[in-house]
Image 1 (cartoon, one colour):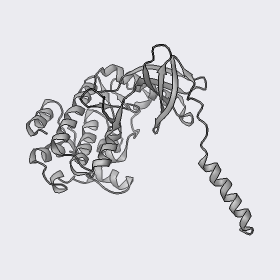
Image 2 (cartoon, helix red, strand yellow; image 1 turned 120 degrees about the vertical axis):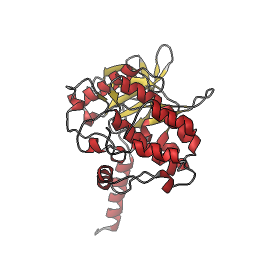
Image 3 (cartoon, rainbow, N blue to C red; image 1 turned 60 degrees about the vertical axis):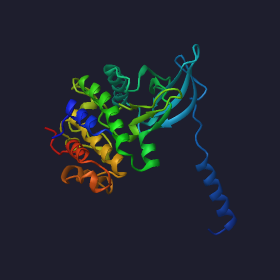
Image 4 (cartoon, rainbow, N blue to C red; image 1 turned 135 degrees about the vertical axis):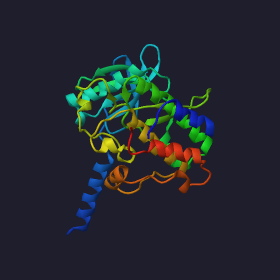
Length: 299
């Protein structure tokens, strides 16, 4: 049973934590040159609203993120612009849902979004706080597995904003290490923030194009069985993904291995192994918690 709320948090607190060779060569060089020369991005140094775009700092499946500075007061921000090839009423709505979702939650553990607009070419964008640090996926790649106290701290940091999101009627629906950001301010303790609510589902908005029954949105390695089947998506969807993340943080590997299709089938059909069967030093209470999060039946 995938429980949520105080019992899970209490468990965490208890454990603590050619023919012409020359011609052929010339052709290859031209092709290599063409492939290695990227298209010029027109946005850096341009103006978006009150912000001057400084540089491109990241990209994802839906959009490109830029560092920008407010022209008058100097405040820095991040601006996410929807990819041109993806512009459509449906995805415009999805980006707007992200902005609305975040502002409905109002939690310090969730990235703040404070602006929304559209470029002259029709691409929508959102303006959000600029985070200094690195995604959890990078940390896991560097360290493979994390020690138990660090995992407990991270789970507690994620559960708090996740609980706030669920109370606000928002399901992230793509919770994974790449969407958890380790904020590392120069003069303060590090903290985690949830980012990229781009495919979030507003539970109360049944008519939204992003919540059509049967749509399968997410990342295979972290998808819940009911999500794969096209069933009802709810808070348990995020908790299952958190279980996959917890397993990976504790062991350095995910509970199910293989190509994306194999992993999807495994999420639906296979019982996950105990984390302690993959790594030493994991207490029984954490085994129990992770398996609860990874239960096939969310009821």
